[in-house]
Length: 151
Image (cartoon, rainbow, N blue to C red):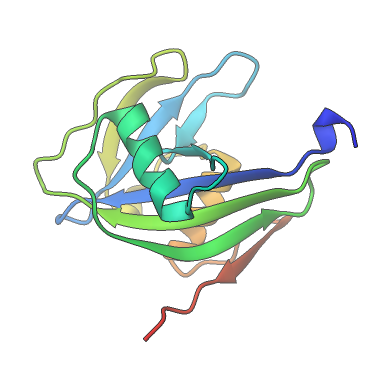
């Protein structure tokens, strides 16, 4: 198997304040189309999706006080040359939570958006995660596998 065909396992964190606003960063990474993106990234070996989401939010935005983390769904990009799977994690923060710009080589800003007024364009994996959270169909080429909470 060559490197381009290696599976990619990622996480996208829907970080929500009590006013229901969602954290998104403007991703302007060299070689990619600039877009808005949830905090997230690759899941490290031995990490759960929830642990990975907490680590990525802390690394990218400096927010460490997350609560009520839960895996909502697994998403899959069926149009990719590599097998791409993303865990959709939801997390809550205090109203006063503010994001810091800790990875300026990737993000130019962090902003909070009302769920009914999300910006465009969205990073494809983030778009899929947010579509599931909002009860919408995934974008073409993506599939979502909802997680049923354990009673």
